[in-house]
Amino acid sequence: QVQLVESGGGLVQAGGSLRLTCAVSGSIFGFNTMGWYRQTPGKQRELVASITSGGVSNYAEAVKGRFTISRDNAKNTVYLQMNSLKPEDTAVYSCNLVMLNLFRKYDYWGQGTQVTVSS
Image 1 (tube, rainbow, N blue to C red):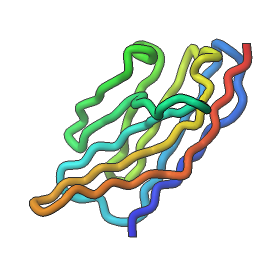
Image 2 (cartoon, rainbow, N blue to C red; image 1 turned 180 degrees about the horizontal axis):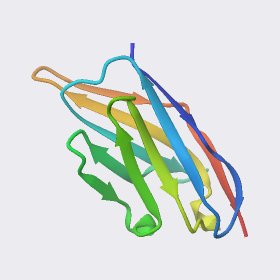
Image 3 (cartoon, rainbow, N blue to C red; image 1 turned 30 degrees about the horizontal axis):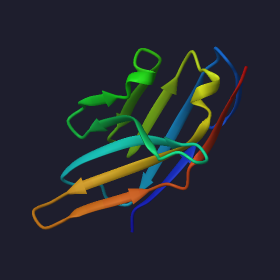
Image 4 (cartoon, rainbow, N blue to C red; image 1 turned 135 degrees about the vertical axis):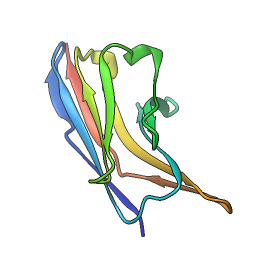
């Protein structure tokens, strides 16, 4: 059973930094992508950043140059370093893991962690 547990959220002033961590228990296999999404009340969940098992990363335009996603495959962990935070970054941030093999796609989500940026 694969489980994702996020940590590192909290309250920070505008301009500050936070580092989110997503620890995955269970086996990660095949071609896979880990990502961070965020959601605010009344809005759809949006992709913040993702990184493939090969290390290729992708960012939303709104966070390019401020956020950095990384992963430690030995620890089954993905990180999101968030710098120069803005009030509009306030959201619940969730970790996602997608794995593919020959037969199916596996999609897992964490519970989410609140990030609040005060002005």
